[in-house]
Image 1: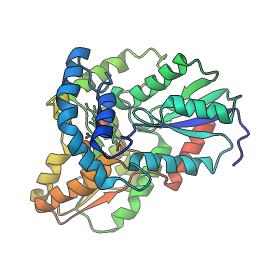
Image 2: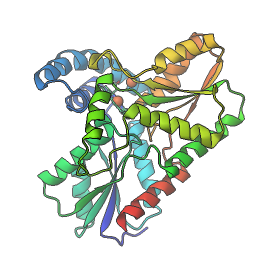
Image 3: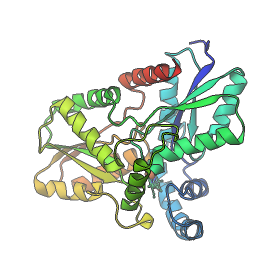
Length: 340
Ligand SMILES: C=CC1=C(C)c2cc3[nH]c(cc4nc(cc5[nH]c(cc1n2)c(C)c5CCC(=O)O)C(CCC(=O)O)=C4C)c(C)c3C=C
Ligand SMILES: [Fe+2]
Ligand SMILES: [Fe+2]
């Protein structure tokens, strides 16, 4: 559609390395893990841990994992976020841009491009592509966009879409995307969310209790783990999935960030479920809006291999919302609501 508005939408995601190679992954991990909302240690310890241990030892393995899912157009996360932007763009009369918290394109690039295209832009609605609030995902995206906006004195205001883990439109889109998979025989459906160090939950709880209303977004009522459990709860109700046929777990643990992460661990459940009689498992990853390394490599590939090795027959991975039609309509609706 032709742009006729002085408002714009920015879709903000986590970001990926520029290439599935050790050097690019090193650059990416250094930026990502030096974020004090991700590795919340004192700066000197964080620097030593990231530069001296995590990045040198992790980069090659992470690059190998990225190579397994990399597409001809780039990382799945970036490609699929762009695809979502294209689908939204086709339905609206305002510009739609993409920015990443780490790596490219940065919010600065997105804001600069936006101004080049439409110099009279007055307001940018930012949608962080994370349904749930936690300081290491939603909050760091918001704060980074705010910092760049302030630093370069952009002549427009920013508005943020709130965390949406319990919003009806998101839950309906998610439930509708799961429904066709429930038509087959299955033993259980696993809702696997990105994990968090327990420590982060304590900090998030304090932030939630002390929210001032000036954060730029509405804080949720409670912490990430409870938000995830609420998402599962609401989706299983929409889908009439009976008790005992579903469970929630947390994936992607990075041990160096602290030994205790929120439980149960997806990895442990994938290994144990076959012994508990679960042979055919459906898995959905609702903390991720776009498929990425953590869903495609960790769950769809590695997770399936582990599940089968431990006696499972099949793991059927349910894709993220990506550019699903209901989800695209939801994004359009939410953007329009905030622009009114
Ligand atoms: C302390 C470490 C980490 C926390 C806390 C964390 C929270 C968190 N992450 C996402 C979403 C994504 N994470 C992704 C990759 C990824 N995450 C971590 C570490 C933490 N994440 C690392 C080190 C990596 C890189 C890959 C690796 O080396 O294992 C991705 C995928 C990126 C991609 O390019 O595909 C996403 C998406 C959320 C939602 C979250 C908190 C809830
Ligand atoms: Fe992560
Ligand atoms: Fe991972």
